[in-house]
Length: 219
Image (cartoon, rainbow, N blue to C red; front, side, top):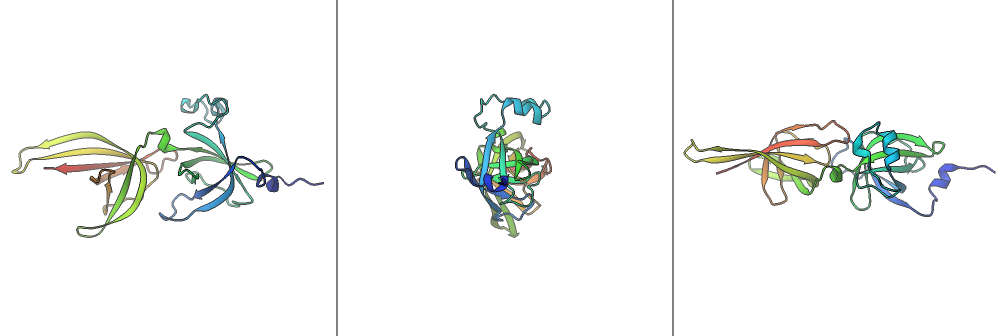
């Protein structure tokens, strides 16, 4: 009698769930790949000490329960022949977005073991922003919506020398996912405020955050 671990994994009766794998760099709005039998597991403090080589951010005493920030996802190779890549995202049924940090094959090659981080939870991204694109002068369209973010004011400059005094407030906007932004883009906050983008940093650091530098001028 032969044993096929790949067939066994997809028929585990309890604990699996349907998720969607989003490939890094795909066109916004791409549907991704549905994996019907994904299995999530907590990273415990003991595991964290091994996989993170002393990074104290992963020392979370979970007692076998799920942690808020770090998870291991097991994805059957039978449903996902091409390996997830670093920086890909696993979208769960509750809308949680888990960035893939490491990938390796496990259980005789029947599943992908992916260590992941939910950066929205890890970095307190409590706002939701939209990205606007200018398609002609003073004509904007909404390009992306529902992006988890944190909007943080960092400096306020008052210019009272002009005939019409103005106040310029500079912000850093930390976002959950890498956004391909250029000079035609701006950010709309949850209260409708529109932020002019002046620069971006950190888009290539997997598991960290892209930071958008922006400003608002009021008079």
